[in-house]
Image (cartoon, rainbow, N blue to C red):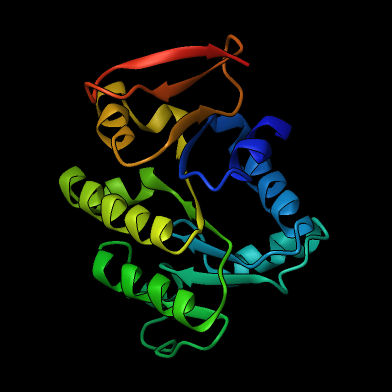
Length: 202
């Protein structure tokens, strides 16, 4: 996690690959470390409701004071009971609404000085959308983050993304990091062919 945080602090956009059995704990550790930085975090959740996330963070004693949510789940399961957003939370119709997600992120960026964006997760968005649409979304989002000096962290379940898809996404981020690789290495996209990687020992 220290290595991951070190890379994140360099204002780089990264894809963070996490094994299934360690996914939730790693995500909570990441938020805990970012919260300690006393910076504002935009957390885009396509997996859980804001309420479920806040409960889990509270149990882990992680403050949500500086976490702003883009909730892609609550509205679709509330049967119309949730139809509003506020300064801390933007509610999205469902994970297929990529344009809404983008607008919600950019609205938070306009209203608040966001330092980190964490998107949970690429896998879930791929369930609801074509890969080419997610690629355009990630491209557009990372470009906006770069322009505003915001660090982007796009999480992915290791078992939920294949090598071909990972190479496609690699063209829009600075690094792809595996949080618990079987051998101590990370993958960094080379300048040149988009399907080439070089391996660097940690």
